[in-house]
Image (cartoon, rainbow, N blue to C red):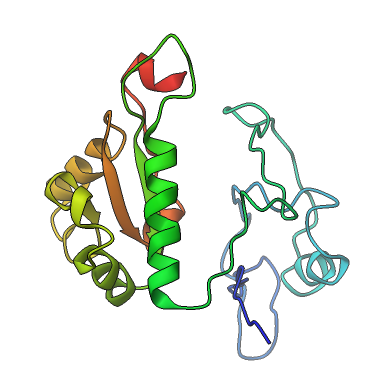
Length: 191
């Protein structure tokens, strides 16, 4: 059996204009939130009912994304997108091959290297890969984006900015996979 955690949901009990129970009083007149996951059809019926019945969200307004439509080419049946390894060494080799492949430009008009970000479940996993012989050729210029490396706001901003530079390989812990805007400043990298 293969057990893979692909995502998690977490809900907070939001204060309402009405009491939830004897133990949860009303606090606010309005509750506002911004998310792209509540649109009809993107959330299971049970979760939507929870939002309406328990959290008492009654009105939802949708605005188009400022980033435009999603253009990812993800195909879960593709052998290019899903790879299964039988050992840690094979896993590290697959990651290294993928980094090498993705560093190459996607356009004939550009001969520079692309940037690559690799996200790991934990700091221990990231460190094991970083220290491995498989990653040795990338180690000198590699960027490690971890909670420990980003304990100061300036350090965090610098590491995030550096992650999108030409030829940059960045290893990051999973917490940097959501909520971080990796901005590409180099127009060649947009091709």
